[in-house]
Length: 429
Image (cartoon, rainbow, N blue to C red; front, side, top):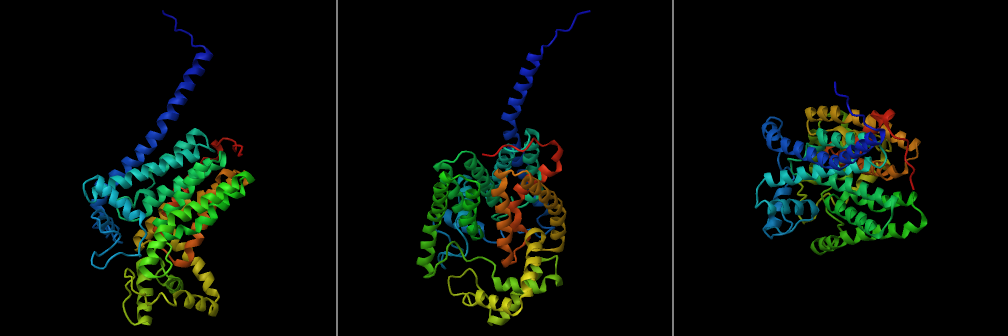
């Protein structure tokens, strides 16, 4: 009987190290590829079958029309005869235009491929972030969890900004972490550029221009603060040409766009929230009808002409709050529910509740663990989550808008779920 050759401890260790290196090289590709595949499967196979049954509109906000007009050389406009619009920011329509250009106008397939790729890259960023403070296996869990988490790829087949915003925000958090570890002007410029792109996609990200560099500055040494000032200045320089364009069109300062929910409408929704707590569409329609009655006619938000609500919307909203201070509490409660879990219909709200509530509970535990362990590399992500959530409360937005935060929240949720398998807290610089 032949004797089996003995494997030395050194040889076994070398083989294990080789397998570890191989896993480290293949994991990013597998995670990104999984996210891409799952999203493509949902876009091309699942979505066409459920689109009609669940009343899912492909382009409810007209972004594809804007993108096609850009591709045709007409600029950012809903109607060529009406001229340019300031109702939307330019980045997402430009992204759609690029996707259509690269696929010879294939609609919606070209956009589906582009947004699926963004979903895969978002998962890759989350893996890279997690790899800095979790074990390699938990970093992979975080990446794969994002890849198959329905709340993240749900909007890939639809013309909403959330898929692009998820990608840009994950990239911002990754670059912010890299800056903390080793600050350079290139990283500071990259952070500023990403902040500018986020704002030119959705104006609510303007709140991050002061907050995100400040969050980095809390844990930065003094020699980094000049770089962080450059970050804020670069983001403003990215936005400035569009602000100048808007001023030339309207004669007013419109930093990015006007398509934000009104604070006065949010007051109305907060008062009526518990009449239709599971349907954003009903709440919106009821508040819209009230405002139309008060202004005496329909409201054309996409027109460059003066909006009848625009002159006194904010001042009237403040007067309402002064007269009824309890409205602040009502808006906080209703705005929080709406931002995280309220969908267009009761069915969509129930689905969002099932998808998001477990993640939110686990993520809260994960954030608490990170704070207790003083994992300062994660502080910017925590601050961004809080700022973006609180910044939306005054506007009474639907649960869809919390989607960009779900990928870092999945990361925190994974860290809490597998808390016993985590590596010791890494030493932050």
